[in-house]
Length: 326
Image (cartoon, helix red, strand yellow):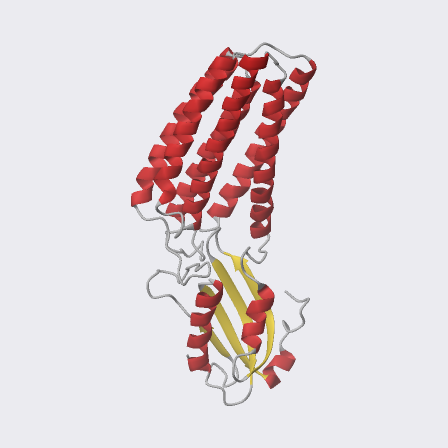
């Protein structure tokens, strides 16, 4: 790397296997985006779940089952989630442009944020209706509830299997797999509700189960919403310990100070870092640059690192040196 003013060295290390050097290791050395083969899995999963949402909504109205309608709303959210994950997997691969210099990876954050808000709004409406029905119970068809929810177990289970092969290598795929698998469990809960209504005749079980389902959705969605908001505000991504990153940088040979350290998410799966490293005189910037970028990727899964080297003299004049300065 050229030394621009004999004191100042700016380094930006790219990954040779990826157009713009993004790769999230997740602690195991490398991140690969969803292969083309998962496009088919997304398409099948979305088609199956859309058909099931339509059927569940129809029979939920026919059987006066709020539990079925609650699960239909949840499953429609899943369709949006699958579509967002698919779109993100495609958009993240788009090359950066003059206008979008980081590419379009951040669309995955926007999709997660929109998905979380939509789920919370739908769930709020369902919970409100459930409370009303607890006070004024309406007859429901227990057998219909059981049959439709049993189909849901099969649909969600089959969709989860489509993503099982890639769940260990790609965070987006893992999220799709876990969401579908958990939905199969929720559908099992609805089957139990239908069975109990048939056995006991307690109509209040339907809105009660729908409230439980709503609580499960809110619990899961709240985490998604919080993470999406944090990433939108350029927070340090989950799974990355800023103190450990700073500790590693401080222990580098010839480095006497670290300042202006920032770590943020380029997408829901990719992270970036910028920092100023103050060097003792005579440090080999070029060699150290390659070492730091490689180790940051391996140790912390940060694939897009930009590092600026400074001498102690330059650092004293650096306007970005105090921690409270952005």
